[in-house]
Length: 267
Image (cartoon, rainbow, N blue to C red):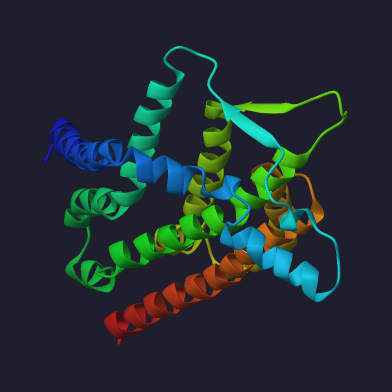
């Protein structure tokens, strides 16, 4: 196909992916009670599993902890006329994107796969499943670990008894959304490394060589997406570093397969 034909094909894949997101977003829109009361405001309640877990650990060691409090010392409010409606719309769209992520990947794969050789398509059959699994693991990690730690830290932080924390709904949702989406995308690292290795931009040696630099980058990234306390940053950094090490092995495995393929061709 010509370049314009490729663009037209890509346009239709993007349209179908967008429609898939909007269809699920519509369902999320009508399930607003569950989406907001259970999902969105879950980390605001002190009976959230993460808070209960840390509270039990503190009790085991006989330590007083804020995680055992009855409630978080802040309220959520809306300050603009269209604030709640806007929050409802955008939350539904983001819910649609998260739930429709496998379909979005499938549409992207349908656009890319015709340009691959039959063997490459065969070896990449599990791409959608693995990429979706990693994304949902990342989303779960972000929701149950990063989001509650961030909300708890920032919600309890205060500089004076004269100040009352009254947090706008858009700010609260933005904190939750950033934690969840960022972790979902970060957990795609092994898939990204796989394809970068396939096209020759990354090698295991390069990844090992820049391991120390990567550690610094990971810590900076952890500092950006978490509250500014050491424990939260370590909690985020550990799975990212594990993913980095897994990516090195994936890159090595890809090159070994390529070497065997070349050997067979010249044998």
